[in-house]
Image (cartoon, rainbow, N blue to C red):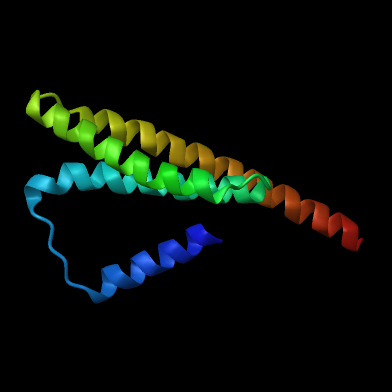
Length: 117
Protein backbone atom coordinates (compact mmCIF):
# COMPACT_ATOMS: atom_id res chain seq x y z
CA UNK A 1 0.00 0.00 0.00
CA UNK A 2 2.87 2.38 0.77
CA UNK A 3 4.16 1.87 -2.77
CA UNK A 4 0.86 2.94 -4.31
CA UNK A 5 0.61 5.99 -2.04
CA UNK A 6 4.18 7.01 -2.89
CA UNK A 7 3.50 6.53 -6.59
CA UNK A 8 0.36 8.66 -6.42
CA UNK A 9 2.16 11.41 -4.52
CA UNK A 10 4.95 11.33 -7.12
CA UNK A 11 2.50 11.59 -10.00
CA UNK A 12 0.65 14.51 -8.37
CA UNK A 13 3.91 16.36 -7.63
CA UNK A 14 5.17 15.71 -11.15
CA UNK A 15 2.00 17.02 -12.74
CA UNK A 16 1.65 20.12 -10.55
CA UNK A 17 5.26 21.34 -10.40
CA UNK A 18 7.06 22.43 -13.52
CA UNK A 19 10.47 20.84 -13.05
CA UNK A 20 12.88 20.85 -15.97
CA UNK A 21 15.83 18.49 -15.83
CA UNK A 22 18.81 19.46 -18.02
CA UNK A 23 19.54 17.12 -20.92
CA UNK A 24 22.94 16.18 -19.52
CA UNK A 25 21.24 14.54 -16.52
CA UNK A 26 18.70 12.53 -18.52
CA UNK A 27 20.72 9.27 -18.58
CA UNK A 28 21.06 9.41 -14.78
CA UNK A 29 17.40 10.20 -14.24
CA UNK A 30 16.24 7.51 -16.64
CA UNK A 31 18.09 4.73 -14.82
CA UNK A 32 17.07 6.13 -11.43
CA UNK A 33 13.41 6.16 -12.48
CA UNK A 34 13.68 2.63 -13.87
CA UNK A 35 15.30 1.49 -10.61
CA UNK A 36 12.43 3.05 -8.65
CA UNK A 37 9.83 1.45 -10.93
CA UNK A 38 11.59 -1.89 -10.47
CA UNK A 39 11.26 -1.45 -6.71
CA UNK A 40 7.57 -0.55 -7.00
CA UNK A 41 6.81 -3.60 -9.15
CA UNK A 42 8.82 -5.74 -6.74
CA UNK A 43 6.80 -4.35 -3.85
CA UNK A 44 3.52 -5.12 -5.62
CA UNK A 45 4.75 -8.64 -6.31
CA UNK A 46 5.75 -9.08 -2.67
CA UNK A 47 2.42 -7.71 -1.46
CA UNK A 48 0.51 -10.16 -3.64
CA UNK A 49 2.76 -12.97 -2.38
CA UNK A 50 2.08 -11.78 1.19
CA UNK A 51 5.75 -11.23 2.05
CA UNK A 52 6.03 -7.44 1.66
CA UNK A 53 8.36 -5.64 4.05
CA UNK A 54 8.36 -1.85 4.06
CA UNK A 55 11.98 -1.59 5.20
CA UNK A 56 13.16 -3.73 2.30
CA UNK A 57 11.06 -1.69 -0.13
CA UNK A 58 12.26 1.71 1.07
CA UNK A 59 15.92 0.72 1.24
CA UNK A 60 15.70 -0.88 -2.20
CA UNK A 61 13.80 2.06 -3.67
CA UNK A 62 16.38 4.67 -2.70
CA UNK A 63 19.41 2.38 -2.76
CA UNK A 64 18.71 1.11 -6.28
CA UNK A 65 18.07 4.64 -7.57
CA UNK A 66 21.30 6.02 -6.12
CA UNK A 67 23.35 3.03 -7.24
CA UNK A 68 21.93 3.12 -10.76
CA UNK A 69 22.56 6.87 -11.11
CA UNK A 70 26.07 6.49 -9.68
CA UNK A 71 26.90 3.70 -12.13
CA UNK A 72 25.56 5.79 -15.01
CA UNK A 73 27.74 8.70 -13.83
CA UNK A 74 30.79 6.44 -13.56
CA UNK A 75 30.14 5.10 -17.04
CA UNK A 76 29.84 8.65 -18.32
CA UNK A 77 33.21 9.56 -16.81
CA UNK A 78 34.78 6.44 -18.34
CA UNK A 79 33.07 7.12 -21.69
CA UNK A 80 31.24 3.79 -21.46
CA UNK A 81 27.42 3.85 -21.76
CA UNK A 82 26.80 1.76 -18.63
CA UNK A 83 23.34 3.29 -18.31
CA UNK A 84 22.23 1.17 -21.28
CA UNK A 85 23.04 -1.99 -19.34
CA UNK A 86 21.04 -0.67 -16.39
CA UNK A 87 18.09 0.09 -18.68
CA UNK A 88 18.18 -3.46 -20.04
CA UNK A 89 18.50 -5.08 -16.61
CA UNK A 90 15.84 -2.97 -14.89
CA UNK A 91 13.54 -3.24 -17.90
CA UNK A 92 13.85 -7.02 -17.82
CA UNK A 93 13.19 -7.14 -14.09
CA UNK A 94 10.12 -4.92 -14.47
CA UNK A 95 8.70 -7.23 -17.14
CA UNK A 96 9.48 -10.30 -15.02
CA UNK A 97 7.78 -8.79 -11.98
CA UNK A 98 4.81 -7.75 -14.11
CA UNK A 99 4.47 -11.29 -15.46
CA UNK A 100 4.51 -12.72 -11.94
CA UNK A 101 2.02 -10.08 -10.72
CA UNK A 102 -0.27 -10.92 -13.62
CA UNK A 103 -0.09 -14.65 -12.85
CA UNK A 104 -0.73 -14.10 -9.14
CA UNK A 105 -3.74 -11.90 -9.90
CA UNK A 106 -5.11 -14.42 -12.40
CA UNK A 107 -4.67 -17.24 -9.88
CA UNK A 108 -6.47 -15.23 -7.21
CA UNK A 109 -9.30 -14.39 -9.61
CA UNK A 110 -9.57 -18.04 -10.64
CA UNK A 111 -9.66 -19.28 -7.04
CA UNK A 112 -12.21 -16.57 -6.18
CA UNK A 113 -14.45 -17.70 -9.07
CA UNK A 114 -14.17 -21.34 -7.95
CA UNK A 115 -15.27 -20.39 -4.43
CA UNK A 116 -18.33 -18.59 -5.80
CA UNK A 117 -19.40 -21.64 -7.88
